[in-house]
Image (cartoon, rainbow, N blue to C red; front, side, top):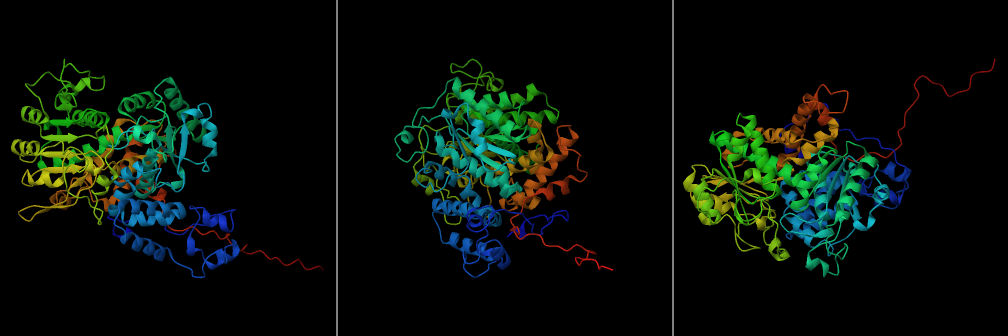
Length: 612
């Protein structure tokens, strides 16, 4: 329950139900998920708003409604069935959906987001019920502003956009990728209390190179190969300009699951012109750095003394690496020295100067002289002797089967520890894990690939092969692991949801126009600070997900303090009490009252004056 969330809400937050004016009456009130309360409409509301007789006579509380939906969820064991059911609640009763989600966030986040959202995306056209978000195709060039005008909400503050080319670790899903912006924005609201009506999910359809989808009769997008011409860039330019023209310069635009080659390019192109960030690059970097900072507290070794080896050299790995360098520089190390502590191993092998395979401009700063004969990732571990290994989200050549995605789940919402369910096996092999345990007293192992079936190793293998000494985190959830000596360790989940909702809330509230990497550095530090000694003793590197609303609010407060102190904020006057300012803005799930406000005119008589 929400009452169990760590950190009491402050007095500046009002819990009273709001009076909301509505012009709608009768059935439209019940069909709109923003206004529908189901049987919780009061008798007066039913009579005044034309609802009497359209509902059963019972008047329910939201508590009873939430209990009904929770009990129905408890009967379900299939994660896709749970996803469809939850999304159905969202389509009918928005506040009830968020209440159910927030009160059981640790169990339900893996349903509305990774890993189950990956399965939902692969089946998006098959489970389609009602369109969500805005779809913009390359055939709509020149008309994007008019498409935005069709969106019913006018006060949009945050946009999450994808082109579906690199959905989680599942590859090109085209329009089926719409499940990702929808899921992300669910967490904007559930984790940080950003008003749902101010959030806009967008999928840009330029085709897909996924042959399976081009043959799928239920595919919902353009049946064409991806357009990679200048028309694609022109479409994205037009989209960015239209969003700002429609909703304002300070509208937050989050790029999500674009292909590696476009993700960095668009970030460089737009970051100084718009209020934008890429969660795959910057959000992943921030949550990974927070895990390293937490590990620093456990081990007692400063981040400047760590050596990090990445499995992968794409957008996530480079984002993490650059933020680690920034953190090391803040601790007093030069940029050149910090970069020397970062190594990367991609599909061609170790990133080294002069190797035959091409190294792009984003990677070259982490290409070092050859350390010796390195033919495999295990060779790299033994030669470089890293204190931490980090696996990045892979771009896969084929989709895992829906059955393999389902098999990664158990009824309690925890992910099973079966290695290599959907692929050729874990990339952090048993030999790699054992080597890390030999080289380090407390090895740091981050298996960040999503969904769970694509993780580089399981939590069970990481702990057992290092005798429980490793500090482990994964991108998707793993169940607690019981070691042979009886100790129970709880794996940390390096979920971007710890970062992007709080950052988004802070950016929206403070009116930031451009989002620098220093904001994500501050968010990482704010997250790491919230881990308690007791939680570290359980093996955690992140606070429990059950506390994520409070975690997100505290991150937002820290970021708001930072952007005002740094001169980045454009919302004035500057709030004196930043904590109260943030908490007072948080949306809650209580139903609004749609009754007209009735009041008296004190001291006024409505009787006509006496005629003398």
